[in-house]
Picture 1 (cartoon, rainbow, N blue to C red):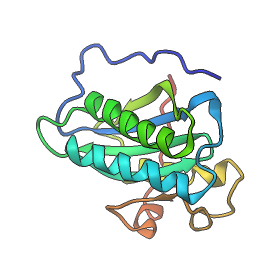
Picture 2 (picture 1 turned 90 degrees about the vertical axis):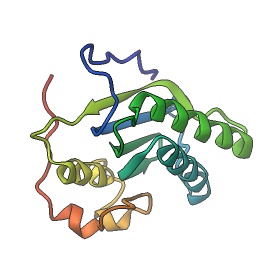
Picture 3 (picture 1 turned 45 degrees about the vertical axis):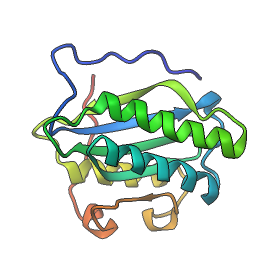
Length: 166
């Protein structure tokens, strides 16, 4: 399953202090994140791109064939489009070098959080993804979720997030 080119918000520049819920799918939806070695290679590059583009990584979940990220711009000039490009470029390069396979599909999904959407609620939604998918019985059982900013308990104590309907 190939994702099509996503529609960007036309009146929004993706620069500044904004939070984004991002999803990147693996090439041909292969199970790239089935083991810790592969997740570690990609995670290091995602963190590198976040630092370079001045984004805080609020929450992440490496599912077998896709990645969910919640990131927040930390500076007036934090550019989400540049973060997406750099994070996929860095991680894809090092994944290909280590494992001999293309990592990402060309496009992904993005959701710009609006003022009434609680960041921790979205983080909870991301961390609970493996439970909803039936590959873990609890958030704490799944090894490839977390947050460098908040404790899992703090996130799980937040109110649940419900995706907006289109």
